[in-house]
Length: 476
Image 1 (cartoon, rainbow, N blue to C red):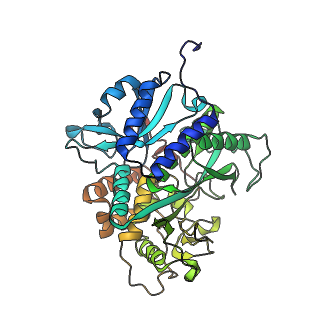
Image 2: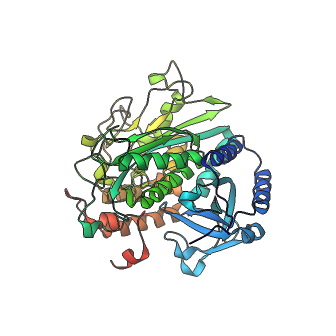
Image 3: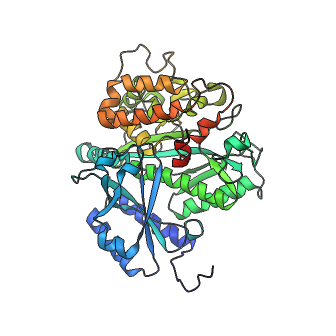
């Protein structure tokens, strides 16, 4: 189709990076939101080459939803964007379905047109209930509110960066066709750090990394991972809400790039048995008055008592929160120490089978790494869980808490029982949201064999929440 007459916005990658980094700097400096809103609306009004604004939000399980609003309509009606919440799993019932989307003008992105289409910009939205309050089922809004209150009351800036592993498989929609194909087919069998410059895995990593760079991710390194056809593209620290948004964008970029190449990306925690699974190692730290308060050059592993209390609270609630960090039936295949995955509720500077690791750091980089997070967990729920547990949870009276012989559950049913029975998860999410989440996880579990066995079963893939669609779900 000839679109030469359309004259839609399509910017070079270098210019995209400049715009996105400027917006990121505004978030970091906490420029008043009223000023940001005024700037964005003026930009949208003046930039005639923009046709639509893609508004993004996530459901309770972390599935990303996107709506394209005509630019002119959005500029006039951005404060009254309604949608049917009953159509979103885990949101409202049909009898109380009306919800609104509010614009988080801080989370505004210019995206590469060769991947997302020309003439568009992207912004994250916040779900607003009928009474004008933040919707309790929108974990992004809950996380943002929690982070802002920590800053206002204690001066804490919550920072995070996630190392997200994925697999690249042959064919488009490989997860949805898993049953027909009887498995996944690798595009590369090279392994850790090894990929020839022109092969499919390397070309995919290069293209995805370029898109992330253009969107202001501030990349650090990228490489093939240990398992065949596995990859990881690392990027820098951000405030906790931006970090969670970047997880959603990371997975979206990877899926888009792979599809354009006729391939599929999978963020299932363990799509193939017998090789390393996919993790989403979650690195967190807290700043106050410009200083990293996890750092103490004289502390154990050069970490402050404050940081160790943070770790101890996470270990104390390790079983309570496992379902929030490992959200699918398939996730429990990954928690196998034979493949560098954590299943022990302990903290260590060296043992990669530990739930929490203390990486080597300095005054700037000292951090806590929660290794038990699966890449299919909701990023907003996972980061809310880690920070709120680390700051507000209780410390159990367990001898040698940091190295006691305790283990995470090895199946979703035990994780569900722990989650339902814990007072802490009620305090963490509220009773209503906790019950909704438990019901969703129970429904997913009941569509899969109760015993995992040694082979990845088709229902683990087909009812996996990131590839969920109404057609598959209703065929059960």
